[in-house]
Amino acid sequence: MIFINNTINYLQAKNHKAFYLAFMRVAMGIFLLKEIVSKFPYASILYSNQSIFKFNDHSGFVALDVDVTFLKNYYQLILGVYILAILFFIFGIGKRFTAFIIFILILVLQKLNNTTINGGDKMARLLMFYFVFANAYEFFSYKKTNKSLQPNTTTNNLISNLAAYSMMLQLCLAYFAAFINKLSSPYWLNGTAIYYVFQTEAYQGTRFNQVLSHSNFFVYSITYFTLFFEGSFAFLIWFKKLRKPLLIVGFILHFSIYFLMMIYNLQIIFLLPYGLFFADSEIQYFFKNKLRLNFTVKN
Image 1: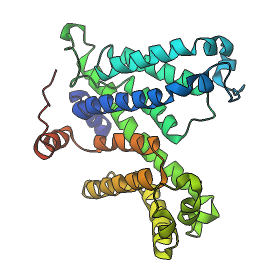
Image 2 (image 1 turned 135 degrees about the horizontal axis):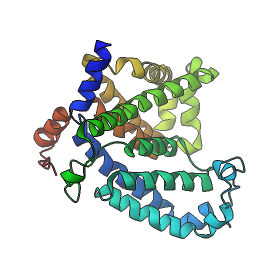
Image 3 (image 1 turned 30 degrees about the vertical axis):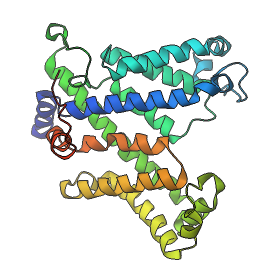
């Protein structure tokens, strides 16, 4: 009981992830904006009634008795509101209400075309859900928050901290789920999965892929290392001495996949929560003294 009370008091004391949540909010907004702008030339193919992709009749729209044809007729309006909401989100306008609107619109767009979404899209949707509860507006916001309009501070801190830790746990769960899924494949178990991945034309990110795939040492070591990393991340990340090297390895792994396999959005969205595993003071020190970016003025 004492442990629970101490934990609650700790979470209520302050918004422990205020700076990185704000930075992550801006980065998340830029990511979402880049993703939707890249799809805009193909919007009619993806979201309209003339889409080449079949709508999944078992989606939540059917359960809610929503007219999908109507939504598809006005897909341009939905995209316009979505882009405007993202811009508001980047500048901290509308705060949690804007985050909620974006989450709903992500859900709508992904349901309108659930054929082409991938793991990165699903992870982005989950992170956006947590932003509905996170106080990510103490930094990098367009306008100061009127303190007279703020909710109870301790409750606000508690909810925001729980949202931040939920993002961290979501990342752990995603890695572990990927690990469990790989265990069902004989190619991952016998150590040859990377060979077949690098032989696939869709993942030919560089001319070196073929060369690397013919190195037995590379194939076996990277295959089993990936299994170890994904299977152990959820447990090792909570040990402070192991946290930094584990996250550095994660950065290297994701950027390697980014360049070698051309799997782009998933790598970025998985890296975004990494900063939450550090204290805000460590993050601000890194920005100010390592990157020489002195923009940590609080709104």
